Image 1 (tube, rainbow, N blue to C red):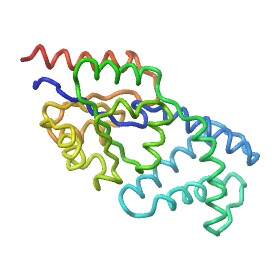
Image 2: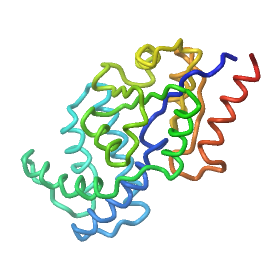
Image 3: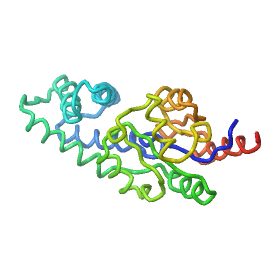
Image 4: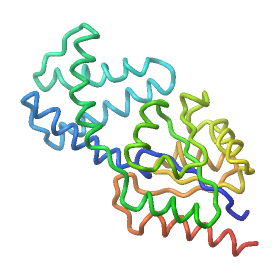
Length: 230
């Protein structure tokens, strides 16, 4: 095991509580349309989010279109009419987006972990499958942005996780070899498998926040093992 010199992170579900923020926003948004946000309704909401976001990530549709398709998938079965016009759908989605942005929050242990890593001399990077503008806005709002040496969005670097080229860009911008980088994320395929395929060490965490140990303890444990192995 190579000594860890840099730590890369996923954002949504790892440092940023996307599920908690999105769930709160969905409850508010659906309620404004007269829909009770039952467990099954929320499950449909998140299933549509995942499906159409992946369609955007793969280049099948635009970022705006994945938002429109989410509403077209979820709302009509709930009795909410979605007009065909893109402007109308975008305005409707704006109601959800405003609620989502007002609910943005980092996990409580995220900022202390980044500060601890910086104090211990580690370089810190972010690799996220998202748009540059929105992901940077999340980092600014939560106070996390200033702690990163490198921020790589799939939109900027041109590759999305689990593509090994995305992880190669992260390592290059951090100035370390891949094997000296630990990548931390909540997705077993995009984050963990992708990082390992690129030659990095990897750590899987619970994206819904139900963590048996704080993320900082998990990260520090891996870093300590890498040091002891030298």
